[in-house]
Amino acid sequence: MINFFTAGESHNKAIVTFIEGIPAGLKISLEKIKQELLRRRSSYGRSQRQIFEEDKFEFVSGVRYNETVGSPVCVIIWNKDYREEEFVLQQIPTQPHLTPRPGHADLAGVMKYLRQDIKDISERASARETVGRVVAGSICKQLLEKFGIFIGSFVVKIYNIEFDKNYITSDEKVLIKYHNLAEESLVRFPDRAKEEKILQQINNTRDKKDTIGGEFVVFACGVPTGLGSHVQWYQRLNAKIAYYLFSIPSVKSVEFGLGKSYSNFFGSQVHDKIYYDTKKGFYRKTNNAGGIEGGISNGQPIIVRCTLKPIPTLYNPLDSVNIKTKKSSKAEVIRSDICVVPSAAVIAEAMLAICLANEVKIKFGGDSMKEILQNYKSFLQMQRRL
Image 1: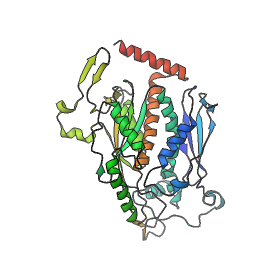
Image 2: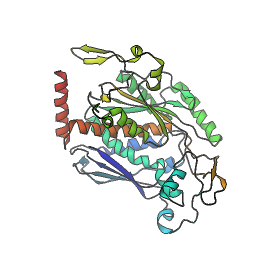
Image 3: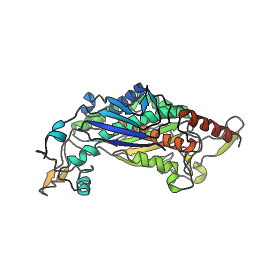
Image 4: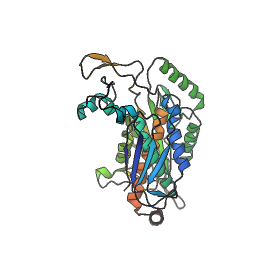
């Protein structure tokens, strides 16, 4: 299996990611990792921190001459905004954060861990932690590339401005087209005609000192039939993917394929009919299931839509209560983003990549890339002989 962990706080020295189970012999492109980190922080509506945060990283184990050796991979991503006085020099904080933000982990966190300073919670609950996920995800993307699997994303809604073209499709070229269009957009929105409206909406929201959410699609093309399983509830691929995506801060819903729209149709209208061709083998003309049936990948693109709530840190803070005095107060005002939907889509790519890389390792086994690729080829040959 492939397991990964992160450590670190938003303004401490670094975020660390630790990945166990990457096969030996995988060539690692540092440039691809840099590009993923840049994609995460380069979208309209992010805070000023993204302007100066460089996301410099350093491999400290598991990689030699830019190739994995089979041992755990550990990467440090340095925080340029490190605040030594908050983590090292002071024994007791002179200005503790005492007023929790509605919608954030602040109050639940201090009550769970019995802390007197909200920063003990907010520093770790901060989405800065996701920089470690993006590094791990980039490594897993590079692994999946060896199996012909491509992972992408695009924004389909910000506030009330929605992408109105169909993307629930079996045509991988359509999904990749929308992904490429999103890569050219400041807000990762594939319809340039509506992009200006979105930019204006973000500007208006900033002027109001408020925040906005939206929705994005993350997808995987080239996924072979047979990842996941129906045998046990916890082995179902859709359940695993949902678990990974729901772990992203502010994600509030996850839908596969048609998702909630299934309830608008008869079964005869939405289930993907099966056909057979001597060259293509089994195939479908539609992909309403989003690439997963019975908890198992069916060879079609995996398509997932996620909803992101507005960021809970507001420059015009909401009503709250001081945890020490128990008196009414306004929530803490901390440097924050206005809209993070485009960046969240990139983080979702990373999480989907980690999940699928783990499923590939489970299905095809092996301690080296040579072994796992050979097992993969053998499995495809056996499928073709069915």
